[in-house]
Length: 469
Image: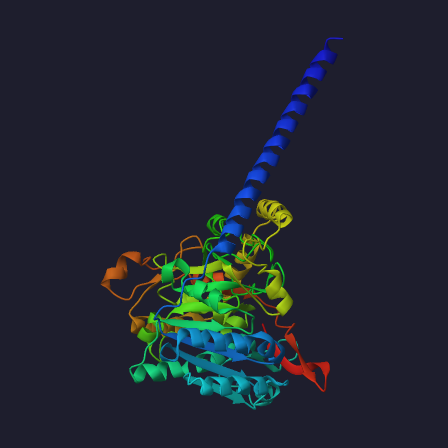
């Protein structure tokens, strides 16, 4: 008899605590959802700042992009350059052997830019990817496939070379005394002039780089390779709120510029100063060394450019502007841009996304990949590749006259100072290459190359072109 009341009291206490906890969770979720929704709606009502007198260098590379070029991209570029003004803009486009009618579409753009007297260079090549593969392997950018013994063309160095070629007019114009304030890279996405203006004014224009968010389907961010949160980690999911790091999550929930380690995501604006300082032999797009890629480690040229950029420090930083959302398809663009006074993230998505992200952080770990990555890079170091690659890297950084300081919470800080004023940042005797590569790294499988699908005779067929990720 004595135990029954005690059992009842304990059950009653537990029940009250459970109800209190449930109540607090409901209150917390409600308040968080209201905060996020208010921030999203407020952001949708803000007017885009006017494009100022900054000089903008617009660059873009294309391959088999005809549909989006004709439906959105060309008209958007024409509207943008008219707003900027012919005296303040240059457009550089490189097309690389498309199988569809991308060349014809870009010819239309070339005609319109010429008519408007907009300075530009549009290069269209007849060399296809298949032609590139048929050529003898070059000294760099190729790797032996262990399963076949054949040499494969690495995708990242190939793309890095295209980006560097699209930048050539930038350096040529500099030699003529014509410089730019910002470099604007445009992927094959739908965008508007107000969006570009908003992006260019991220943090009042003070940034090393500022990126949009890109979507191939409404609600799902597309570029997961180059995007890393402020702690250098991959995003937790492709849906809102995306990020693992607290600072990155807090910013996107407030619809404010999100601090990140790297990004690209459809449209990216760079402060042009480091590119002017570097000259032709300095800051350029690149992949990791072939010898490191053979260890099944790869990094995106769109990510490594931020690591190489001396301005990408805490002083200016790299940012994602969540209020600039672009799309690779018209329906994706419309889905994430519902209009003024409307939130692009639903109430349900805010609630579910917040808790999914929270549970994901509690239940998942990122250190396993880091351990594997560190082991592979260590094996690369032990084979003697470090000194040759690092020597070339240090020489380039000293030419720029800046230093690289990666944030300590990547792994260990890896710092190289260019002058006495930076020596206090130099970790004596420490050369942690993993720290440098890790925010941009992806563990790859050399036996599973990407198969590129192309359209020939109105049929989608597998191309013989095989790029390694």
